[in-house]
Length: 280
Image 1 (cartoon, rainbow, N blue to C red):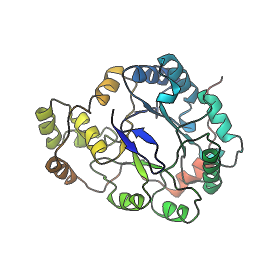
Image 2 (spheres, rainbow, N blue to C red):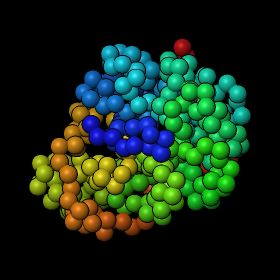
Image 3 (spheres, one colour):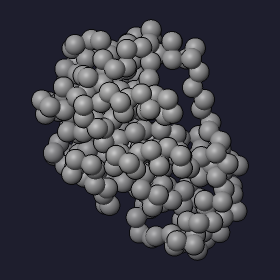
């Protein structure tokens, strides 16, 4: 495994398992099997409503909790709930997480960020982060934070390399954790000739080349899957390294085009929507 060092000295694996849009039953299996095969970073969220299943998968894996970098996200409707952090830890079956985010810049997100800072001071979160806080949201937050976050989670892939955002984050040593790392499964991206050519050179699939690109960009990448074979393939990216020239060629694919565009209407909905959590 390779690691990045965060601005508070904590180390995080460069690749982890994401659990977005994975059912509790599938998440439990995916987490268990991923940890058994060598993953040490797992990402979930209140909104994914699979935190209990993730906790079960961790326990079933036999991997020590202290060897796992576990991240989750507080949902917007929970920002003013003083019990949100404790409830999240209870669902995961742990007394701390390695990384705790606020998930969206919706509702009273500053109250949510204050909860993160409190959890960090109390040792309930070893690192804190912001998810989807790009542009004006990050501009505002950086005037109000008391503790600088360690992570930003945002969309990133070779069609959307987040160059402007990275210039902002680099000022504070904030790392990017990328979602939609394979362009939301866009065949146009996966079928770009450069990935086929590099795949042939290194004996890897186009998806593996793209995931390796993420890690060499300095991103932490969290592809999700309920297919155990795909989970194994996604981890098998650390046995080769793209050259500087190859990274520069991939950079030429950047279109500054994202697959998900946030709207004010969506943010209003996020603030109101209440997750229905899996029963204990």
